[in-house]
Image 1 (cartoon, rainbow, N blue to C red):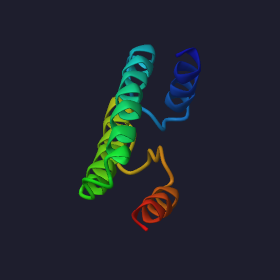
Image 2: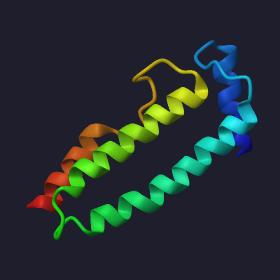
Image 3: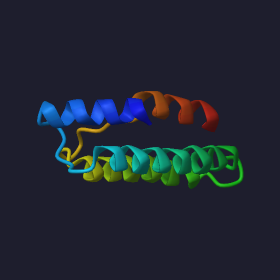
Length: 96
């Protein structure tokens, strides 16, 4: 958490982020990350039975990024947690 807070405070100084509560923002972001790290692997493990999970995985990642942007007061589409090409390639290999 302290490292997240440092990054957030730096972003506030650089005017990339606009939040009044950097420590609380760090805690919220970490909580969301834990949730994402629990839900996405379960969806990946079920891809054989539920190919529609690909859309759910993409939606989960986009919603996480959007939530982080809002918590930080960052501009839309500036937070990219996961490289989309890596995910796309990974999911294509799983499908084949």
